[in-house]
Image (cartoon, rainbow, N blue to C red):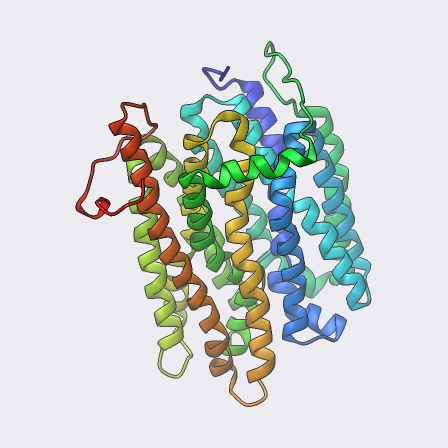
Length: 440
């Protein structure tokens, strides 16, 4: 039974858990400003450098559905504890790695640990907070996670320049592994007085059935494409290619490029709680907000790719990166859709399915951008090279916009059909002219 109020213990447990997510965002995005130094350290080019992110984020995406099953089976406390240990071990290994294969292994371990954090935090939020608070707590969690991303911009750049690669990443790795003890001590799956849920192992043959059932729900499919389209471009820039683009194509210094990247974080941190409050009070606004953001994102990429000469004024870069940063809080709509339209026993699995969306897009584009840069850099200037490589980002963005529109109409059709049958729905919608052809 859902709780009816948020207690002091709930906030304490949530804050302990969300600190792991903060660490995950730091570790995930640390290569964003360390990418050029990583290229020198491991003596690799853009395509091989992109493989770090492809491997890490690819494993993250592949782990989302297994993570949902692990949380259902073992509880979020154990999964978060394991996540902190894995991230700490991965970053420690990355600090000491002196060869490309060892660096890849380190990012793989880190990616698996990172993949186990977000769904665990969401499960704790669902257990300890009333349903009306869920959207606010979810977006607040994402916004605070941005603090880890923020540390991975200007502060990390300065640390790398003064303390060096090994010391910086070694301290981060050891501290994260040590925090696992705090998680095991402070986090509890359910509030006091609430019976511990009985863990039911899911047979391997039933996993596919559960995933398929979640995928057949139109709002899960819509959540997948909302997440795919809204979060991948700001994440791609902050994870890997934003910093090299600003330094090599835009001619910025390292501190100046880090400052522009920090815009991605600061805007998301400020906008996240606001977005949570808005979609919580006015759930009918969720998809119009997504549509507005996607229209702005298309315009931003058209400016980045079409600017004469390819080198933009610094104020324009700040503005464009700031608008694209809104994709992170907007992507939270995906999880609200999943929670509203799936039965409780399937929410974790459906959340994992939706969460795959954005990270699948990042995995593909991070690799393609690196490969294209390897091909065109010998014959084109840096601004022209990045313009060609970033065309792949525009293609993936337009694909996501198309599929989001398709599944928005289909999800609306399913809701309208349910209303006509006299069934209760979480968010009522009015029939529009363009709903006529929607698949019910």
